[in-house]
Length: 94
Image 1: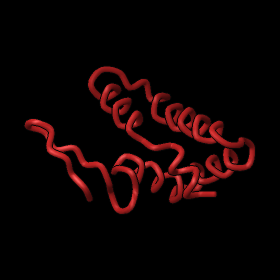
Image 2: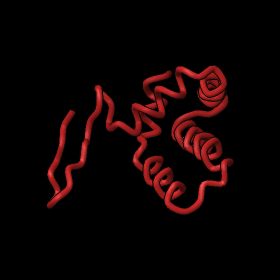
Image 3: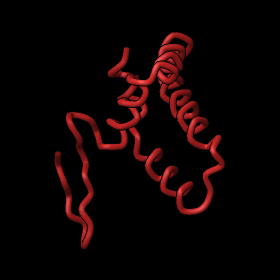
């Protein structure tokens, strides 16, 4: 894990060989839950190139946003998803 100090904050830039903890966590869920794994496989099969990463992001945002997350919870989820390297997940599951 690599950390960078920014004034009074520490930002983690790598996690267990992945870009960051957020990317690792999303990949873990996508590859360990059957329904998410099937969706990931559909995206890998039905889309090509950059469209795969874009579709994967949309699918994951749909999963979490269907719970009507607003306020602090919604903002935190949106911030986490914005840090995910979607292409890295695609590349590691081809």
